[in-house]
Length: 60
Image (cartoon, rainbow, N blue to C red; front, side, top):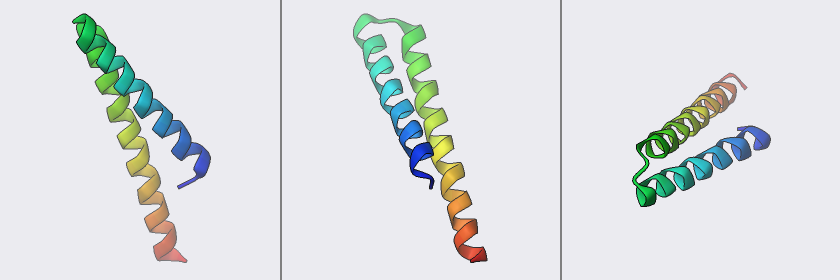
């Protein structure tokens, strides 16, 4: 995985966790859902990059 993309996905995951936690504390459903959505997007980005790496390793 490219380091830059990995860092961006990790940052998005952390941001999502923080937003979700704030939503849990305040009871704000919008923040809870937005936080979970960011975490899901970060997981998807990690999965895509992992798949690219696996394919690249297989080809090379």
